[in-house]
Length: 408
Image (cartoon, rainbow, N blue to C red; front, side):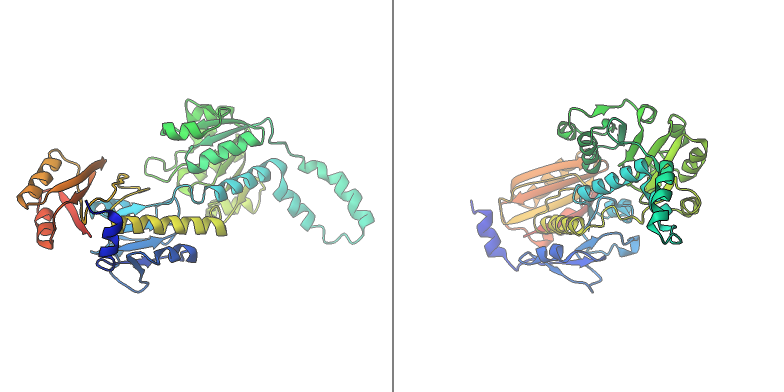
């Protein structure tokens, strides 16, 4: 059997793909395209792959040649994922690449909420009329008591969502000598093993809101999570500091404003301003707003860019999928010169139909994997003999097949 390394040398320049950046992608990531079968094409209207950060894509951006979209970040609410799935377009994100940056901003949020830092700075900055140190020092000494805060150590930190970011926040809380309670009904066994033993599980979000002094939210924006942090939870709280560095859609901010007035919430620190929150922040110090800078560090942008590029290149060149939000993860070591990827609706008897069709086309299967996710199934098939475009066209005619691609 011919080794894949030898095949790659033999096949170099036989198949080329175009990748288009739709956002400002860090240069260190774009440089990862060098030496691959993918070329950077900023002006093409029909790319094979798209790289995006926060730019909002629509159905009109999904051209007929598009095979993959890679989001340099975790959230994909700026991408029409359902439409992509219908067209057989794989959508990637970069979980964990910006996790440390967000974790560090959560730390800043905890300090801002516990020590009245923001209000203290404003207070001092307004003392421009005091010209003499002899007047300033006693004035500060007599007024600083109004900014007395509390230490994080010994208080309880609740973490909603224990994925790449939430787990880092939980470990940070432990390192700060906080009592840490986590809630994540979708927590995987692998993720659970990575958590410190000091992190205690909550049976529900209601329980988490009852026992926590601080709560940090780290869940994705989905139809099922829209407004999930709301009055039903706030009424369980008592003098709670709430931090949202996830997505603005997951928190009902009208309810936040109401329960700040009721005293159930002590303050609200978020990376997602709204007009209502901005009005509140201008008259009260119990709302602190940041302009969505959670992942805005040079390191995070570079990490996300490199990860996004590597994932789209691997998919275009080999068909392998890692960190997709709409397709299953699939990794199959290349064994032959000709590889076929088939995307189909996840309905019964599809594997049999595909295998039968390959046999009728006199194509011999060397290796094959089939993995499904929801309504979609993905097949990678290494073929021992030569595959031509006519065979690919025949495979596309199979009922419930969405997309077929020959990878050489």
